[in-house]
Image (cartoon, rainbow, N blue to C red):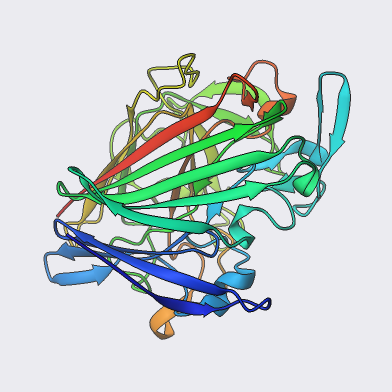
Amino acid sequence: MIITQKTFGVLSDGREAALFTLKAGDLCLSVSTFGAAWTSLIVPGKNGRDDVLLGFSSLEGYLQNPPFLGATIGRFANRIKNGAFTLEGKQYQLYRGDGDHCLHGGRRGFDKKPWEAYPYTDSRGVFVRFELESPDGDEGFPGKLLAAVTYGLSYDNEILADYRASVDAPCPVNFTNHAYFNLAGEGNGDILSHELKLHASSYLESGGDLVPTGKLLPVVGTPFDFTAAKPVGRDFAVLCGGDTAALGKGYDHCFVVEGGSGENPEAEPVLRPCAEVREPSSGRGFRLSTSQPGVQFYSGNFLAGIAGKAASVYGKNAGFCLETQHFPDSPNQSGFPPAIFGPGKPYHEQAVFAFSW
């Protein structure tokens, strides 16, 4: 097991951003203190080792990063309708940067901030714990929040993700990581032939603005049925109404993970199977488990000529995301699992990516 550290770049205020590289088992994961972002993941395959994460070669790419490549998302992942919610009789207005809605925490969410980092090892593997203080009123959210996100590699070829937060006033909290995977290797074509299975018999209906309507719909008989493994692109023609070339057409939906509501009264996460994915040509795959109630499956629909690392250019469907999370717009949906945390109710969720080849 190995942990190395180097300077990734220098921020405008003179602070250095560090890059940690973790090695355990047969995996190698690099993570940056800026945005607590996953920047690369080297995984063996039938034809050798490849980097399977979309990303940038240097810090400069992550300073803007409109697709949120590899970034840690907070305070609230995904969309909040009209950038507003009401809590204990008070309305809070957030930044509206996704049409009329707040996306991924606002204008300068956790993906745009430097984190403090603390590397360590234990009996399971190698880890970096990232910590961030978000002041009261940050991006419009109430309460001072202390975030602690830990990423690590186990000796069993797993990525272990642990998300924690405490906040001194009731507040919506919803963390995830926005990694884009291409298991054939980043920059190596699209992900439409990847075979995906989701442990989800229902998904959240959403409108054209990708905000949930509040309804949970069964997947059976629809393009959203991944209860048996199938190629990601198999039902694109049906899903997109025949216009598969249109930008933004594809999957960007929250699926309901089977086996629990996502509530942890004792603040102890309970992992449940969430997804399984395999890329046939390389033999690479992973099984994803989560304690969260939902997983956003995004097929990279809005990627359009993103200049990535190693001279790669990421076009539509160049990568996919499986973002474990609470349901989008939960603060405005009383029928969704609650995502309000605060004094006496800390936030704690986990995800595990178990790789094979």
